[in-house]
Amino acid sequence: MARMKFLCDADRCIECNACVTACKNEHEVPWGINRRRVVTINDGKPGERSISMACMHCTDAPCAAVCPVSCFYGTVDGLVLHDKDLCIGCGYCFYACPFGAPQYPRVGNFGGRGKMDKCTYCAGGPQQDNTAVEYIQYGANRLAEGKLPLCAEMCSTKALLAGDGDIIAGIYKERVQRRGFGSGAWGWRTAYGETITA
Amino acid sequence: MTARLMLLALLLFAAPAGAQQDNQAQNPGAPAVQSVAPEVGPSGGGTGSGPIPDSTERPPETGDQRATVPPPRPPVPTTEIPAGRPFTDRPNIDAGELELQRALRGGVIEGQVTIPNQAAGILIQPAGRDWRGFRTRTLTIAGAILILGMVVVLGVLHLWKGPRRIDAGRAGRRIPRYSLLERCNHWMVAGSFVVLALTGLNITFGAYVLRPVIGPEAFTSLTWLGQAAHQYLSFAFVLGLLVMLALWLRDNLPTRVDLAWLRAGGPLAKGHPPAGRFNAAQKGLYWLVMAGGVLAAISGYLLMAPGLLDNVISQQWAHVVHAVMAMVLVVAILGHIYIGTIGTEGAFEAMAEGEVDWNYAREHHSVWLEEQAAAARRSVAPQEARPAAGD
Image (cartoon, rainbow over all chains, first blue to last red; front, side):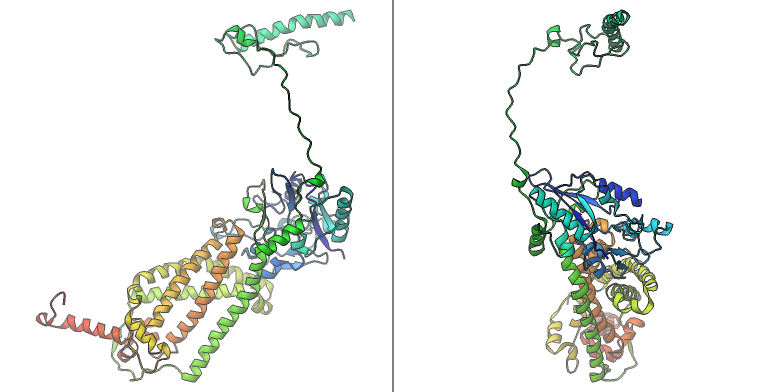
């Protein structure tokens, strides 16, 4: 099976936030929760880069390692998903996650965390694919329909790529060779322990 | 054709007139000569009904007429804007390099976000990896070693030396040691601490120990209830600590007797070195519980209400402080429970019933017993036998 990954080509991202909006709309994510966000580093200075970031579905995922109730599971596509019925909202995955992906509704005692929510790579959760129960908890399951994550699918500059890690790495390499520069695949060293050299 | 031209001509004449009327209706008292707003021409398609767009540079109402006609501006010579450098020549941060640098030197890769959650501006935080190591290895392994080690040490001590008997046997005569308030408060702290400790240990070790036994669903239900109990009982624990601080602070200040007690060998001393109401080990435990309890409480509340500490690095440190303090307290209290129950004959009744045997008090807290006895003698002595005030 393919090893699914995200790749954000920061030389193409124009910080339009369409990926953020698409994600929120597709999964009807509640207020205050952002499964995906766009971070602009060196804003307004030379070398400004915008990077669209969400759960990177890490190899050897830190969230899964620290979870006190072991609610995470891996899929054959290399995705890191979680079972909200098992989550207790302790926040450990957020402490461990290098990308700040886990999000929590503030519904617990004393404004504490509710059950964690994060990017599912548009692949839903442990329930039966494309059922109402799954939709309420995790949002749409596009992967089960043979589609890729919506954020990447509708990226206007095709900065955000999703799909088989080898294929999207190939696309990025080709781009870098053609245009003569590249700022690297953001988060890849941290998430997958590798970088793309063109 | 001619009809059209005539219509156009009509419009040309009618348009300014109509516009002026409109304008005067809108601004009564405005000067008849309006600003430099473009006149409506044929290309403007003015039908006469539309008002001339109000100029933003309307002259002051009382100003003289000359101000209304600005002199034509001379063309300003502009400096040429240099073309930007080609993209390949611009400073380019490489993701892989930056991530490696941050992982080695510490620090986060941070930027701006346009969502309300400004804490999301941290793009990558490598410190999470260290925290992961603390949670999955350091804390788990060290905690297990400390707790199991303490249990083993106490077990060996119990089997080897046996419980500490009252050497002189029970006198049968008893002396009050703890008031009702002191006992109630002690048991409130003790009860809440046991629940806090068990639920906390469940968070740390439960996934390895309990989850495989009772299954994921049952384990989650238990842990969910556990974390709720952990949060609510923390208030009872902290309240109890504050009451303890008020009740026992004076008796826990270090004295010379404590030094002698420690020099004599402390808890493992031969015979019974003198001690006040609390011996040096009890005082040590008191201060440990106070310091550890306060630190654990502060860090715990910061973790409990994530809105208070909206920064992932601070939250990691709060967890580290909370976990270390909790483990230290659990280990110390294990020893305290052993010594206070089966480890020492006659000790448990102090906290259970409030009174201890006379001989127990004489052996373990001789200085305190003398003080109590002296106070009692003074209170029953006839008036003239009492020492003068200030003696």
